Image 1 (tube, helix red, strand yellow):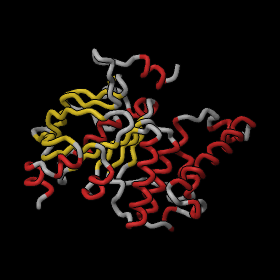
Image 2 (tube, helix red, strand yellow; image 1 turned 180 degrees about the vertical axis):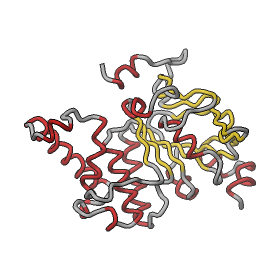
Image 3 (cartoon, helix red, strand yellow; image 1 turned 90 degrees about the vertical axis):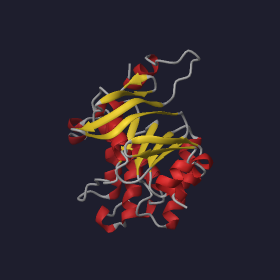
Length: 269
């Protein structure tokens, strides 16, 4: 049985049968006496876009890193599709369908755009390095399949014309879209985005928003940290606001816009 199948079989549903895609229960992270995240609880429903906003140092990126398994909480729990994941290593969490796109995209400078995206298939390929190196027929067939899917993902983010260029030849915004295409090749059910709009021009912002809406319409769940509040309010189904590691508000974009505490601490006039 695959990791994803085991996760579905192991769901810890509530009495009414409801199980959110992602749930944080009393999450806390401390660095010595400094509390970076303080008793944060909220859930992300299947097929929604939830955006986390807040000033620098609010704990937003820390929350994503804990979700990916790159940082362990000091207290509390994280549940993905009914399975507790805060005790799991990052590779096991990835195998359950969670993929993160970081602010630092970490593309391979000596590889083409297409080859960079193809590396995202590592979580579901089975040809193996030895088979690929020996050019075994199964491995060669799988490589063709990966290449086809990678080309398709690059087309979705509007980068069909740069397949064979190197990351250094692209703008920062284009590099971020390459990172997103690579993440999509992992076939995630939960997509974690850390400031995906940073560095994008107006056309790239519109393209990315259209893509995220399309992914949501196909059932993907998206948890996003973002500073561009106008974009957040346009695309989010719900918004969570963090301030000095604490959740101070949660609700629809319309409710967040009118929340007096959020206005006074973050949004301003």
